[in-house]
Length: 150
Length: 135
Image 1 (spheres, one colour):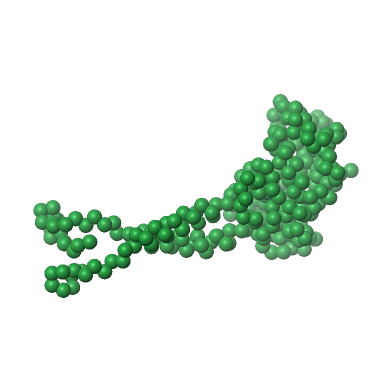
Image 2 (cartoon, chains in turn purple, red):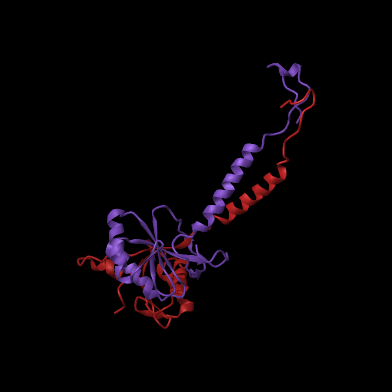
C-alpha cells in the first residue's frame, strides 16, 4: 500500500500507483462484534430449564417466539414456568396470572422423556382450565443428535 | 502517513488470517445456533358445552393409549403395529383430520409422544388432548 496520493480530482492524469486494497478494518470490527454476540448468546439459548426431551420420528417445527411461555416438567416431576420452579398446586394460579396479563401467550411444554405422562397431563389440565387452548409439546427429532436440551 | 522525507512506513498489520479465522468461527456459531425447536402443536379443548349436537359427538375419533400400551380407537382395541394402517383407513375422506387423544397417566411421556407422532404421521393433523381421566 504505497502512499502515492492523487493530487487532484482528475487523479487519473497524475497517479503513480493504484491502491487496490480493501479497507478490511470495519469488516473485522463487525465480524468480531458478531462473534462475541453469538458467543455470549449461545449458552443462553436454552430457554427454560434443560430437560431430556422425548425423541420421536418427525416432529413439526414449533418456532419459539417472544410470546412463548415454556413450561418444563423435569424427570423428578417438578414443574418450571420459564426458569422458575413452581409448586404443583400453584401451577394453575400462576398460569391464571399470566393469562390475565397476556392472554395471547403461546405455551410450549417441555416434558422430560422419563416423566410419566400424568405429570404433563396435569400441566395441560391447568392450561385448559386457565384458557390456553393451543399447546406445543416439544420433542426432539430422531435424526439430528443435537444438544440434549433446547 | 508521510513521516520522513520521501519514504513511508508501512504500519499495517496483515489482517487476512485474522479475518479468515474470525469468519470461520462466525459461520460455525451461526450454523450451531438455530437449533430449531421441534414438537407437536396440539389443542387442549375447553369443556364441551352440554348442548352439543349428538352428531358432533358421534363423529369424534378418540384414541386411547392404555397403560399396557395397547391402543383403542373409539371402542376397538388395535395392536400397535396395525394402528397406522387403521388410522389411515379411518381418516381417509375425513376432512377435519381431527382426533382426540386420551393418554394413560401411567405411561412414559416418551412412549406417549411416540404414539402421538405415529398418529400424526398416519394422518391425524389436528390432535386434541383430553385431559380428563379415563372412565
